[in-house]
Image (cartoon, rainbow, N blue to C red; front, side, top):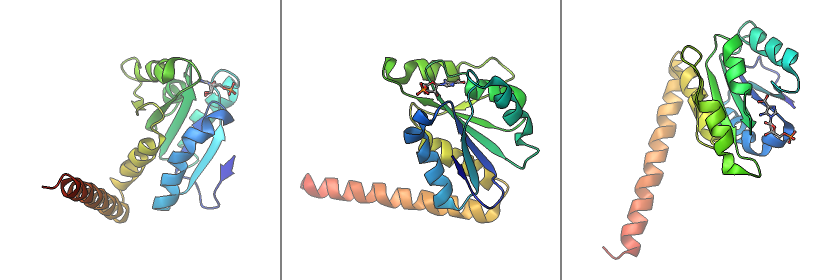
Length: 170
Ligand SMILES: Nc1c(C(=O)O)ncn1[C@@H]1O[C@H](COP(=O)(O)O)[C@@H](O)[C@H]1O
């Protein structure tokens, strides 16, 4: 779907293009922080061989983290985690039925030894931010940008409180 010219360091994959409206929030974070990424459809169920090849080749191609989103019987994040040493962040994509609980439970309950860092249902933005933090741990410039991002969040929340106190007349 999307490929950047610089070598991607984050892979954003999903079970279907129907997941993109949720998953694009992770890509937007990459754009915000200027991180090269790739985005693609890789389905454990529908294209298992390609999925294994993607997971096995990810570290060798220079990726540092994988964000994997899937809905329903969401086996993609866990199966990728089983074939790559990279950190995998799972995004439960909500479908028409069950409010994403099926996706959440499919992704979060991994057996010991094969971790997937699972974010909230449709939490692709947090998945992106978590990937940035992983990269920032080894990149002082990126760490400074994450610190600035957090200071900005603090300022926004503080302003919300100020407005609320004003409205409440206190
Ligand atoms: N959960 C998985 C996997 C997988 O885990 O390998 N592959 C596709 N899917 C999911 O099927 C849903 C419906 O897909 P379609 O919209 O293509 O029918 C999507 O949310 C996708 O992530």
